Image 1 (cartoon, rainbow over the protein chains, first blue to last red):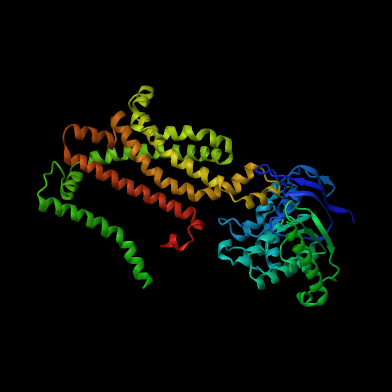
Image 2: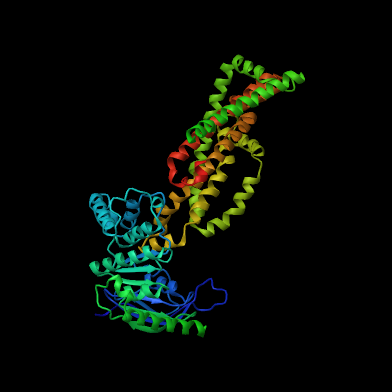
Length: 263
Length: 258
């Protein structure tokens, strides 16, 4: 399989950065189509910058970003995003929130009036799949944090994006809810074959979910270690208590500690 | 228990208002205040009844002027607010002009309106408009320019244009700010139309006030003021009701419920 996301030797400096210090420097990584990649690193290492570069929200100062065979020169339009903050719109019901991407992305945008019933059915099916059956008529603020995050994942997937970008989506949740959502995202990935890039600082989360883990250095960020996770799929939560799993977490922990010390 | 507290709350405005007028009546009688200085509510009420035809006629005219000016302010305020919220350059560039213009006492603008349009219905409508659009502009602009960056990222990553983001997120999220500003704007529009009528109209409560005070008809002056206040309360209440029905999603905290 060829690389779906190919970031090559990228350096990026934000326009507003006073010191002109780069957020990332000499950053290179390749993620294959359908792969689940996780990016871990010390805080402030430029993980979120990487997300913005890969989705075309920012353009690199140096180097190239290629997504799906095309150099990125505008927002990529094939990405779905979810953040730590669920960012649901409070004036729309959960279902209407899910339909928002379809009101923007072509070809759905021009068909939404005609195919409304079909889209609503699709959104309801997606809600049922993440355990929110029948909750579509509630407003997001009537849902718990975990439920909002599930809905946010649905919104990121409703337009069937080829690339799913997750920026610490489970960071604000309690441990049990987080593990539940790991399984939700695991199943969604297995079923849809979407390419996922997950930014996280939870190493267990990265090892449980990802096929490939990239470790970033502290600022200016670059990839210091690339680690494949050979644990067989489908993975059960029980796998997180096996020695093989713990060894990988431990190994990554060492890299991060080293990166923090180097700073 | 909760029900009883609700009823007390609903009654409170009536009790306070009636109490205020009773106190006023009582003070006038006990202290023997001359009706030329401060007429008692009973005599104001009598004056309202006496001049009811005049007051109704002029009152409706003022109401009409106010609503016309207010309507203009809403349309113009929304459009300008959207422009200001959408573009930092337009925002930074036009703020000094807007603030400067808003600082001019509108009573000083009325003569200019008379030079342009003569005496009639236009000066009061325009005064009402000029005095009330500013809070709408500022609030709509604030609502739009404070979109959460993450929400913006989600939409931009879908290929949303700036116009998409403003229409799908900016305008809806500005609605609580917008309706909040309408409450300020409707009362300001009243002030504007009355100022306009006082100086540049042959009808309206403002004009009635000017004529009544020139003729020292003190009870009529007071009656006109009370009519203005009552109309103001009614319009304000209607604005609040529209606000509640349109932006219920924004009033979900305990604070809003209390």
